[in-house]
Length: 302
Ligand SMILES: [Zn+2]
Ligand SMILES: [Zn+2]
Image 1: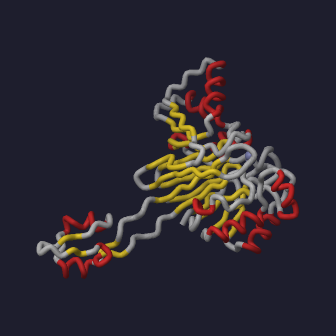
Image 2: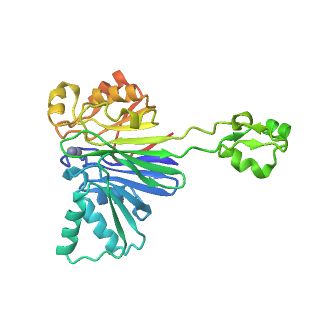
Image 3: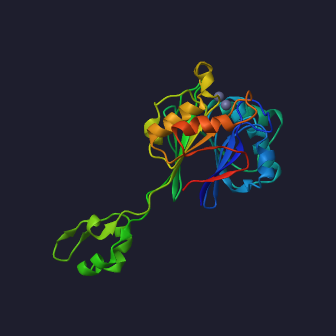
């Protein structure tokens, strides 16, 4: 299963029963936490997130609405006597902040906390067996990154009729699935494409945190299965959005269209708006496969 559960969908303030940014990406048994705004632990309890399964935490940038919940979460892991290492991928200055907080409280964490500063230009952060996570820069008032969760290429499918015709031994099948060619005893090369077909499509999820409308990271998100893009304002406040390095619902939809994603998820709504219906209608005029990121809802990446 590949899915994302929304824990917080509001910008800046906790308001209208909405919380600052946080979400959990699940892939099989693995959970990844993306941003950790204030209230994340309470939302985890409410929506029954198995927090012990989280091994990697990603923080997009150091505006408080994206990480003020983190010191509490790290401390709670300690109180729960977590033993498994935890990997934190975040902007470099966060380490200094956390170090000071732990030092003044004389807190010794019982688990290893591995801090990985996100490189300025992004890059590969996590390389698991079936999935990898990349960071890429977005454009905001302070350094900020988006994240791409991408399944690794799936094994190619075997064409059994052809395999029998060429008498290729079954012991070589795993290599064919991995894309290798086969050499017959007489030296004839059988190209992989002659005896296999492409495997199922690899699915991907792109998280684009606080950003002005920009096409600068279009190549990073092109063709992704599900795109989460911030939509702080409606398009009637397009200028204000630009001044504050945020985007509108319409702009998020325009980017989803250009990036040829399958589906769009909107979040990071300004507290100015109590109702969210207009975000949906505005975006759907441009990109019909749009949904609102609603707290507690789980969106399948499929
Ligand atoms: Zn924000
Ligand atoms: Zn921000």
